Length: 491
Image 1 (cartoon, rainbow, N blue to C red):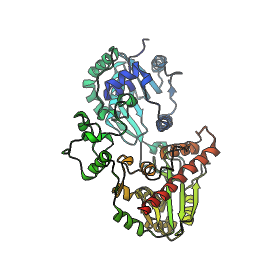
Image 2: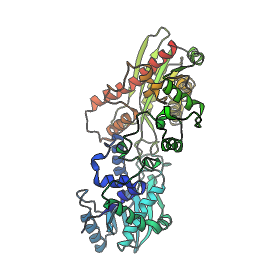
Image 3: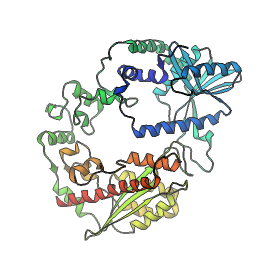
Image 4: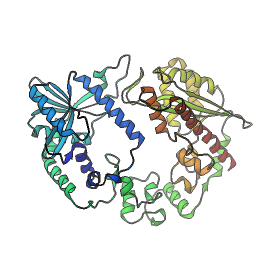
């Protein structure tokens, strides 16, 4: 069998950007390194796909031995269909140079039904297009599908006891949308096949398509001429305005014409960069600092989430607390540190987390966090889970103070923040002696994915050393808040 020209995934890539399609075929060396967070998504997607097979048990798996052996999978699928196999996993079909593998093909009461599994919680337009190319390839191969559906995660499912596969998933038919998409699909296929036959890389300017519906894995190549700090870094500026500036030739902040419609805070960012000026509203900062009540508790949570809930009384993708760091500062500046990091033995860490948090936070003094909505939301969730601790946890919520406010409202702004008020930008701007760069774990996403892998038993590294790395990362988050507040006190 002749090798395919397009696959389902390359078709979707080409529909997003023809240049990305061409590069993926002819210039793979230009591809960006795989983000560890993306790897975690792939692993999770595989887990969800395997669980969904339990909705239709007893099937034959046609997954090829190698990613490059899909033609063998096509032949194997055909053989299983001819044998009368009722359920086929990873059924592969090829027609008109297009290869499409389907998660689950079912022959039910002399009718063929197709099911594509997604680890998301809804059906997107891209998923419908994905199903459309499958429908095209399968029906053109002689299988008359009576229905094609997206199987996705039901985010209202609450785990209680043994995992209920039936309740975990929602099956949504997309046949009507898929049939409508068939009107143009053949033309799109021929157009994309021609792109792959070109001798030169297609001309394509950067644009919103670079990140929608998926982040492009050739962004490093296509955006290489964009400065590290440009109009694309203007805070809260809509994407269409950023590209409007770019297309008009205004790439650097000092290129922006004085009459361009930016709001006050955006102009403040631009002027700070152009004039190399730092803005400090000493009156508001002084008021913020003077209202603090000692002792001060600098608190930071870490959470993890999985598509398939692993704890009772939890939902898919629910953010579950597993760690906190707490620096406590007395009026005389004496500083002590406390911390919590859950075990990874499969037990529910949340009650231990709550009990130690209540003890460590005591009953008096402000609790300082960075981005109050996150910690407050997690504590509110813990109240619902453990109503017996409602009074103590509500007291913690009442004591929360958001250290992000002075930077979010630009009471303190310096050009090196580059329009951001995230702690990862504020810390090096105010306290350059402290840095995440020396840590093994340097940001929250890595911390979350690492702990999740340890909890699920898929982690392959040194667990004890990694626990130390997690503690060091979270500890720096709260020490950073201590030092940032000290800087505010100075001004």
